[in-house]
Length: 93
Image (spheres, helix red, strand yellow):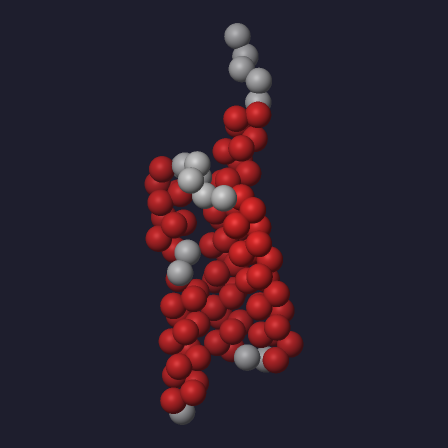
């Protein structure tokens, strides 16, 4: 394995787990109050495009990093939307 591949795989590992602490916090607290929906949407879109790019290039480090990054972004986005829908629901009395 050459040094370029090692650099790519290291970057993939770091990128692939970058959102993991935030995902754990969201799962633990169920709170997404301080997370911008627009930021997560743009980030998820960017990660998705990087994933497609990696697939088209058959570049494993790019594919790995963005596959796991996209899953994490989707989890955060799911909870963000779920929490926003709860706030919009009228109170039943």
